[in-house]
Length: 247
Image 1 (tube, rainbow, N blue to C red):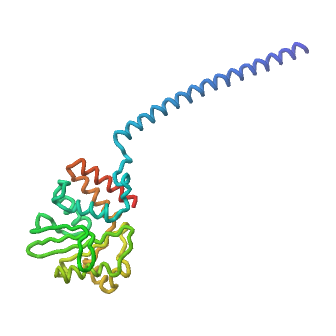
Image 2 (image 1 turned 180 degrees about the vertical axis):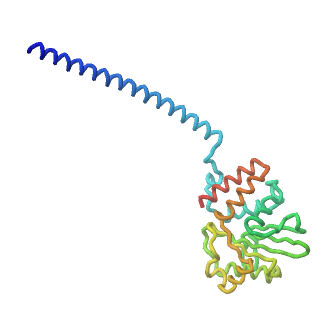
Image 3 (image 1 turned 60 degrees about the vertical axis):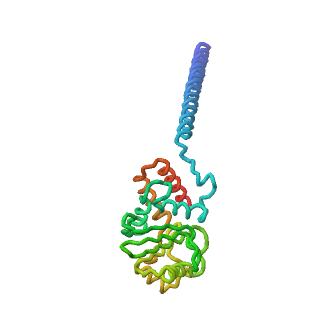
């Protein structure tokens, strides 16, 4: 009997020893794996940091200057710049022609124009126009008003006043004018900006047109980036596209 108890004690002692060795080896193994994981994570973070330093994927000058939401100080002047074939972007009529075709759905081309001018914040007897394009083709004069609305409120009869400006002061026939209502998400001209009966008439004749930053301008910028020959301008367009995305 004593021998049996001693044998049992030896057995359990051996079991405990084996169990202790197992957990000791397991802890060593897990510690080694954890250390290896930490080392790989450190290397990974170094690689990420190097890529960010080189590519700067989150750097956006519009965000840095906190001017993303500034309608008159950011978006209007930048759009006027792009729409000017003689501007310092040196891309000629690339942006203008694409804007006519892909955003406004017209067949106007700068190369066919006898005269072209783009104005920022043009003062008129009917109010200040955010962006105004005037040009002539085959001795016919054309005028396009772009009312740029991001978060600012509408002014009373604003779109109707701009329509009257084109018709009365510029003396343009209705088929040669366009009143463009540019908003973040392509909103229809709101009540109070133009009489309902007149808005319906102008919509039917494609004189009053709604466009959106997210619906139309982003696609326009993407297409222009593909054709742009300047890497600096292309990168600026990409930053502006990102800025519009978060309006």
